[in-house]
Image (tube, rainbow, N blue to C red; front, side, top):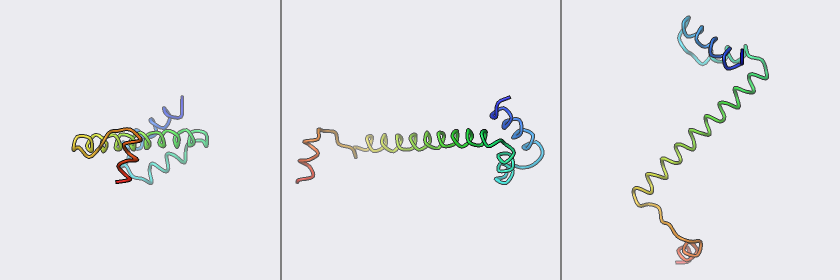
Length: 83
């Protein structure tokens, strides 16, 4: 059974017995091997980065929709900052 499967089973068991809390999640993570903890950290870092990218893309789309973004060449940009 993979670390993810074990973690999922433990989460399910925990959720059936008590409310979800940060302390309970930490206890579950502490029960994992160091290798599994490292894999979990990697997974969460990727998820956090994905969420950051989604948020940034949404902000850019909003700026484009509002007309707050200008498109042009590097020369256009340099000319604009010289003005």
